[in-house]
Length: 358
Image (cartoon, rainbow, N blue to C red; front, side, top):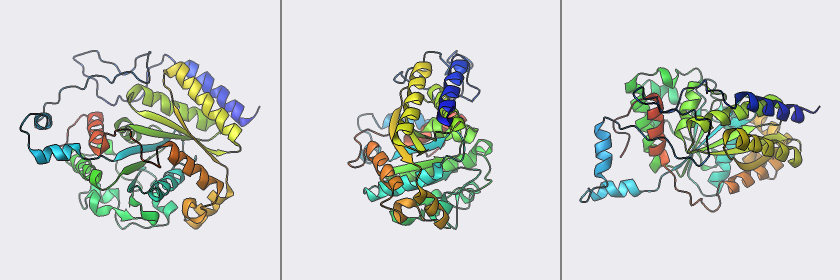
C-alpha cells in the first residue's frame, strides 16, 4: 500500500475514533463555571455562530461602546473605521512539512503583488524564519518579552520589501508570562495594524498552548501538510481542534511536496471530505506545491526560492495560492485586523490588555 493510501486510511480511522471524543486542548474562551457553555458540541457547523462573548468587567468595554454613541469623538470614529490588516496564521500538525519555507515565500509573493507584509516568527521554541530569509535581525521577540524593545522597534527589513519580526529560540512561553509583559506584547501588536496590509504569523508546529493562542485569535488559518501519512493525520488533528475552538475561522489547506497534482488533489479532497463528515467543517483548498529541487537549493543558499528561482514550479505554485487568497486584486473580505486578533488572544488567556485599542 502506498504512503498516501496508508495516510488516508489512518486519517479515516482517526476521524471515526475521535468523532465524539472531547478535545484535550484548552478552549479559546475560558469556560464560565456559572453557566454550561461548552465549545465541544458534537454538532459543529462551519457557519455556526460563535458563542456569546462574556461581558468584560473593564473600562475598555465602555470605551468601545462610546465610539458608537452620537457625538462620539470624530477622530476616534475615523480610527475605528480605518482599514485593518489581514491576519493569517500558517500552521501544521507536525514539523518538517515546509511551513516556515512556505510562509516566507508566500510573504514575498504577496509583497510582489503590492501588499505591505509583516511576517512574525511565532515559533517560540525553534525560531528559524530568519535563516530561510538569510538575514540576522539584531533584536527579536525575546527582547520584547523582557521589556527591552517594542515590536515596532524590532521590525527588521527583509528582502523583497517585507518586514520581519524574529522569534527567539527557547523563548519563555506566552502562557507563562506575567500579565504586565503580556499586556506590553499585545499592545505592541496593535500598532502593527497601521504598518501592514497583511500580517503572516508563522506558528510553531503541533498544538501547544502557544500555538493554540494564535490559532484561536486569527480569522484565517492555512494548514500545511504533505502526502506523508503522519502529516495527514496531524493536519486533521489541527483542523479538528480549530473546528472546536475557533468556529469563526476560515480554514484553508495547502499540500506541500506533492509528487503530482493528482496526489495533491487526492490528499486535499480526502481531508476535506472527512472534515465535512466528522467535523461539519468545510475547507478551502488553496492548492499545492510540488516536490521541486529548486526549493532545496534555495534553502541551502539561504535565499527564498520566490526570489532566487522565480521561474521554478514551486514559485509558480505559491503565486497560484496567493491568487486563491485574493491577490491580485486584494480580497474584498472584511478583516478584523490586529484589534480582532488581540481580542481573541486576550480571551484565550483570560485577560484584557489596557490600551489594546486605539
